[in-house]
Amino acid sequence: GQSLEQPSEVTAVEGAIVQINCTYQTSGFYGLSWYQQHDGGAPTFLSYNALDGLEETGRFSSFLSRSDSYGYLLLQELQMKDSASYFCAVIHQGGKLIFGQGTELSVKP
Amino acid sequence: DTEVTQTPKHLVMGMTNKKSLKCEQHMGHRAMYWYKQKAKKPPELMFVYSYEKLSINESVPSRFSPECPNSSLLNLHLHALQPEDSALYLCASSQESSGATTEAFFGQGTRLTVV
Image (cartoon, rainbow over all chains, first blue to last red):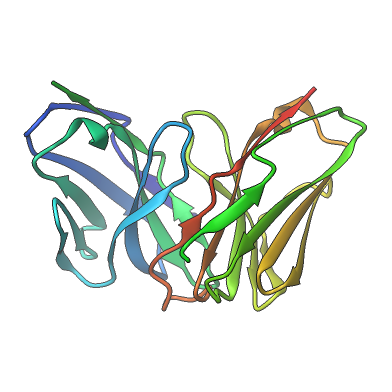
């Protein structure tokens, strides 16, 4: 089977840096993605790692280590608008995009 | 245009009704998906269409019937639903349904309530 584990909740203050971890038990996947979803909104794509290492996109970075079955999303210079749910997801052969349970990030003033 | 459009935004239906959810994209994507999402839970994959053919059915009950009339449109036909089927139904699309695809685009969803 497939499972992706994330912390259920994270709280941080504006301007801080926060890391959301994702550990997975799955095989035969192409890469690890991250999606953001605000309350009542659609999931939106943030980042994708096909290879081990760090990918940087503005304030957001994502990391993958296949040998450790582990990845993380790093959010810098946190803003109030970053309060949302964050999902790691794996893309399997045949097009299955499978989501982790999600981490609810609360950014406080 | 990087939009996936879903209609209706909200739907209330009785357990004996038949209704359809619609999804449209004009990005030339060849893969389209239906997901179901309950409150405080992740999106759960239901169906995958690749080049207008159903490629994945995640053991979804037959009261949910997908249809892909053409490469831009995806429908989900609903019949004899149960109250526990109440959820947000999300449509998504991507360039392909293979490992070459890195990003899926989601619609805003249809919030379905079964009474």
